[in-house]
Length: 236
Ligand SMILES: *Cc1c(COP(=O)(O)O)cnc(C)c1O
Image 1 (cartoon, rainbow, N blue to C red):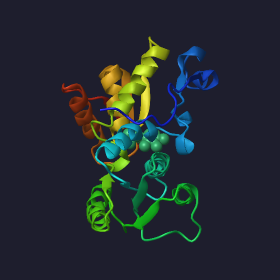
Image 2 (image 1 turned 90 degrees about the horizontal axis):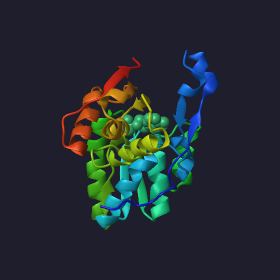
Image 3 (image 1 turned 45 degrees about the vertical axis):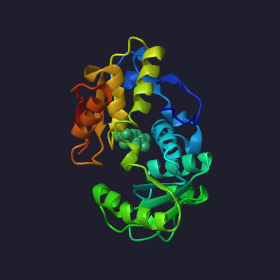
Image 4 (image 1 turned 60 degrees about the vertical axis):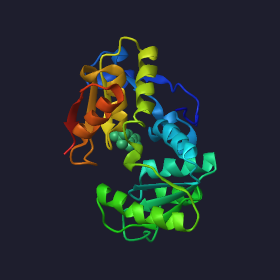
């Protein structure tokens, strides 16, 4: 399957010598993979996954992307941006009872990107995904062709975007020893493990899912066809 090219690759690797010394490393030993510079919609790691997701939606003949997240979800903002770029409508099923009195941050950007917001009440990610189903059915009833983008943009196929990021890192720093990433819905870490192996990747679990480490391991296995996981640390 081809992907839809959203920004230009590769993103740069930038040395962080003073931070390196601060945390006890040699000045040359710490680098930041600048995936905040992915360009589209304010940038961020979800763009690599959305290249594959938008391609999937277009192949399926969809005209509307539907996804879920919290009010400040970066994934929701970038889905809105990717939809706008590709000419697709976007419906965001958002956790919470309604707009705050003074909407800020990504909530403003969702609206500026012309996404429609459906407030879903207090629901955990799995429930939000269930609530998105009747909304998709409703859209179909109105003649739209919806495509449901998974939570955080993560599933095994979409983790391909981060396997590509891992390959970029290898080309930029062939002797890279460790890569640390935030671990939310799992796709980012899963793709990095597929490219770099279990020993080099450390996921810092932000607590978005109760079992993010095993979710990521399952995506990696599906992607590589072998049973591999990665090391994770937890923030809570
Ligand atoms: C979503 C996100 C992550 C985690 O990515 P997942 O693939 O959902 O695990 C890490 N960092 C930032 C800035 C993010 O927005």
